[in-house]
Length: 497
Image (tube, rainbow, N blue to C red; front, side, top):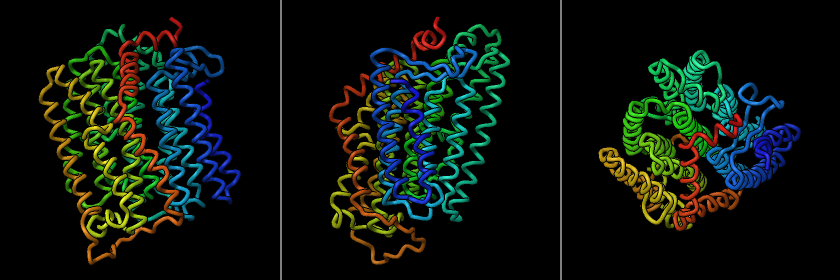
């Protein structure tokens, strides 16, 4: 299976959606079918990479490091597969949930282009084209965020695009310095040439450029404020796919460059990453605990969860990297499902503010069960997927002797349980409040409830299945970690030496 097939399916779908511009129903189902096909082909690619090794495509038959390279190792193939899964779930949810106005302004083409950009970033084989894919992702996500033109959307979109432009400028500065030091931008070639650069301090400096740039995109402390200020403003389907994909591209980029390129000064970079991981966990849970809006709580929760993923990279052991990858895959599924559950609650209750909801357990028992499974997984309680992800990271932290970081993980998990319990108590457990009219109502989508429920059931089912049978996912994560830390396989696949 060529890695180009799952990459270009969403691009073709976006073009076809433009061809059926006036038929929004066709656009919706076409997007679902295309992203489902992308998931199948991405899964085939993952199996192929696992069985046969890293796959590489040279654009225009220009071999590396002179031409554009697309490369699929286990990390890339796995991320593309989960991206397709999240994409098809959100596309199916969008058919009944997204209003006609947004559909008429190109919601489905933009959704497919966003998946296209995210997938391209995962498969990029050189650092400049990673920047190009980031910009494709940024353009489509910015329009999706602003689509509809509501005041709060535009405010969130302006902050989002401004901070991402700053991130892109820092990224380009780092790329320029890298090229001046090595004369190449190909990942594999950089991995070889950076070891020969005599000015190791300058290499460490440029690594901090990428840490800041990718840290912004991942919403790491202290530059995370743009995320909770913007993710609660668009329709819930947009928030869901943003939460599942966008920050995870930043985490992926950190994993890529700090395992393949910047491995010359591990004591320094690992210490910086550990401190930032701990601060990200704490800042996220404290922000979530202070909120009383369903989407704002989940938005701050995204920040906190990024800290766990960075923690594994900071520890830089095979088990820790495997824990980061396991946590990354688990979180993409769980966080998407929680945002979609928030959309279901809004659909049946008409509000995202906790004090205007209540009584969901009595009126919609099934919805309460879906939330409970996803929430307990996010909190890291057994036997759900989040427990195994945190268990691996805690074990890696203890083995590395970083007991203070393990204590931060435990404290953050307890705070996570607190704010999820607050949602459970206010939204599901207590009776409906007497004052039911939200002063800032949001218009629910026009479609049937069952079509919104179906993708949520699938995602929550996957979460539960991973928790009950975590070994296959852990084995994949461990293989991926070994491949990342053993850089020679990637270099040989791309450069042929």
